[in-house]
Length: 426
Image (cartoon, rainbow, N blue to C red; front, side, top):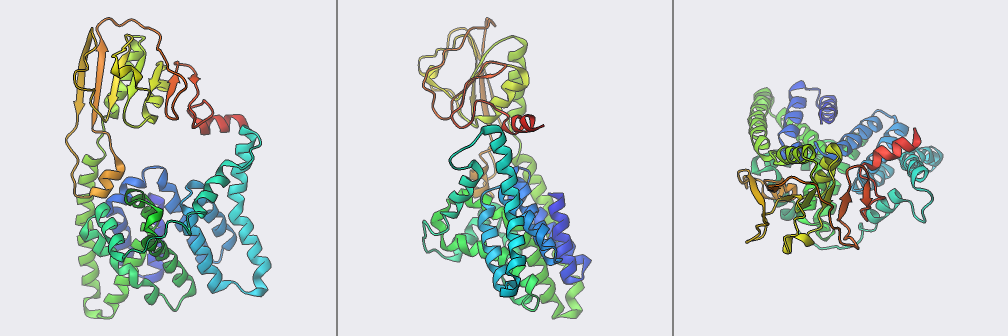
């Protein structure tokens, strides 16, 4: 996130020749709740790679710029849509018959990260009829023409308001005039069109993504929009020289207040029960107990199971109906145990955090931050084997404390996939 902010600062300052408006762009980006949340997840790398790639393109370093755009696709499949439109716009402005050979090098540079990753995957997984990462890129490309549903800009506006609030959305709107403002510079014009074209794409093909998934996809554009909004505001203020500096200070002050407000909101928003659940697994390990977990995200329990070497059955819930506790520690995440659930010889402990604010309803719905956790402790802490029903569903996992005995169907039986791949190679 910090590196992305530096890129936004650099692009804005180079374009406006103003430190003040460059600061406005950075503060605006950092004030966006959706960007604050998703940039701290695996989505954080993708906007940085897209923006850094564009910075290199604008400095005539096309080979490495194309390489970073290709790396952005590797970091997340949905970057394919962004790169697709960027390539079309760049080709319209810069591709000439005399440069076809040179553009071939750029295409190779863009494909190179994907090729290198496929080699790494093949080294571990062996040959596949259709390589895994290429399959993901292909699935995104096939959506470009499917699910078309004509909508209005109001739909997109409501999606942004639902994740960032009305005032920050209004500060982003000047970015819409950026193509006009930057029309005299082909690089900057292509930069602005790339940042805004994806908004148009998802507006007119709303059927491609649901509303909550759109909140994540928009994160790819926010660094571009923040820079373009500040550039457009700077351009507008230059038309009234006597108020330009004061207007910039005013906008910066407003965005600073909004950034502080976002920081206060994120402090509560990201509060989660997982540190307490971590402690439950730690205590189960100390008492040599096994764990049965249902509800919520299936990944954190798998991590805690490995962290403390606790035998754990994740997600499979057949035992709940007949209260087949088997002297295990029973954990319910994001959901309460059924009414009347009271296994013999157990005591209950409940953790419930305050309800989330609905100021940003779409962001709240998408994040699904865990606010409730429930644990049942056996009064006689004696380890017992777990009964596992087979065949497993796609989300069921049984970890015996040392290795994954019942392999999850979404993987190869290991829980830290990237570590296994790197260990295989090095």
